[in-house]
Length: 413
Image (cartoon, rainbow, N blue to C red):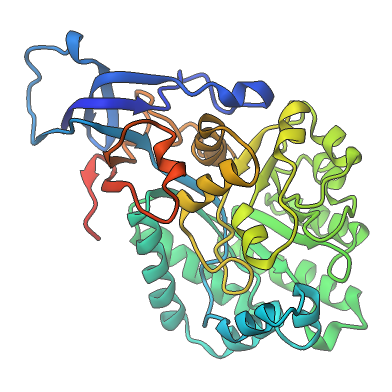
């Protein structure tokens, strides 16, 4: 496929640039008045229209996109899209002023989702997650990480991970899986934390490893959930099975989770709505990625992460959706990028980089996706006619995506 007359080709990063930290985040290479050649599912070549070869052989299709931008697909590195049912009943409680913690204490939240998921079949979960994933793809997402964590029993966690494995096989985008059994303590283990941790370590981890069901281990390290000591115990055990760590960190308090993640060489620490000086220092010049989830802050009215502080401390920042039934019932990465600008005070260039190349890095997919780079997967989207890059985050709530291309082919799913 040959795409010509592109107003602006966005994210033309060199192959060796695998992530952007600190002040680098504002560097978003853009090629104006460009052409782009896709072949065998990959980005084959590109350049300015004034230098386009007069003859390109074996073309199956050619499209002209005057006035339109071409972006690399969004890389959403934090989602929970396998769940049994939405939780709109909790929406009314939020409006009435109940906090996230109060809803959870009353039997809502994660335990509510776990009760529903334990009753659902694998096929039901696969069908509902497929609908959500198709919507995300149509909104420009071309790589995604999906977490378990609504099972909270050995069999239900395995059921979730098997669904994610089926999604990997059924969809044309890279998908990574995270085992998040340490999402909350089931009611029967409320007063015996170690027994549940032993269940994860001694029963669940060997089965996950035997079926090759997960790429990462994740833990919700937070007051009222898993302490730093408990988190460290789970991460250490999972490392014996080759599962790299990620952590839900500093969502509700400065818990020391960020520092723990850096100590354990976590691929990412996610949330960071509460980010103190210790967390900023820990992430300064670290290869652990700070994945920020601004639509979660928007939805449950908690503080927004300190993106500027992280950038000023030379951290690597990614943006992701946190799509889940309780605290972020949306997988729209365009809105996430808008919130990155509006609420995190990032520039359009910083937000786009955080949602593409750095999002790919947070899934260790940055050699495959996340930028317009020769040899990477041809996962991208074409906008409607736009006046400038900033128009995309500026026009929040209105989709600017006209065409989605995955593996070099137009996606009509």
